[in-house]
Length: 249
Ligand code: NDP
Picture 1 (tube, rainbow, N blue to C red):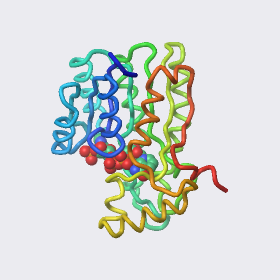
Picture 2: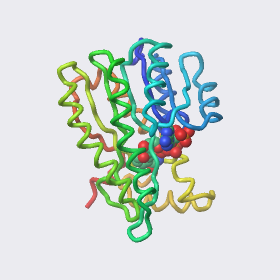
Picture 3: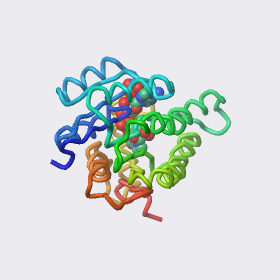
Picture 4: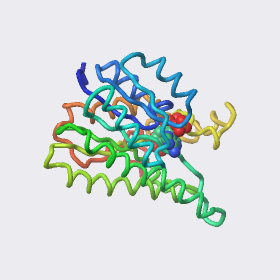
């Protein structure tokens, strides 16, 4: 078991990539605290994960709520070895039709909250810990309508490098995983019906050299690698899990 005896915090752990990662972490021997806003989905996830998991309701844009979640995680399972700052929203922000509030909500959730999650975790982090931030190929591909999202995810790239510089003396690693399109509930507003989702999946597959949409488990396995001692010498890297989408001209 690659995470035997380790403790982890996963924001947005009640759905999609976060939940797939939480399941994998538990299978690999970790004790995991997941957070999210939706109580029903948190409870369902906690039932699936079993006694090695704790589910705490916390909005990542609320610094006090995140501080409380981190303190509860440490109280239950001890100091943290892994933080996966994963919670995020797509938030369409097309040029010409976007309010300041809508733009700021995306930046606050996907970028600002990541900084404050790591800052809240800092007093509880073991030396040698691994921090993984969830980026996106959109920070490179520049898909229309996602200016705030692309900016927030590109911001993580720079932020990870600064955090890595500051935390290297404690052998704490900070890396970014950058998924391509993955089959999760994040698309529910863009593609609300099964039919619309099927069309979207085809579009993503066509733009992906490997010719398919990712499953959440593809991303989770890369997060597991970055979290584990197998990645002991990987610092301030960004790993694209995108079927080649950012590699093609
Ligand atoms: P989901 O919608 O399945 O998961 C998003 C998670 O974020 C949920 O657990 C949600 O929980 C949580 N979340 C959102 N806003 C907040 C908030 N304010 N406070 C606390 N939790 C919040 O989508 P994914 O699993 O796909 O997304 C996870 C990450 O992966 C995101 O950062 C996303 O940008 C990134 N990503 C996803 C891709 C994809 O194609 N799926 C591609 C590239 C990157 P709740 O609603 O309960 O708060």
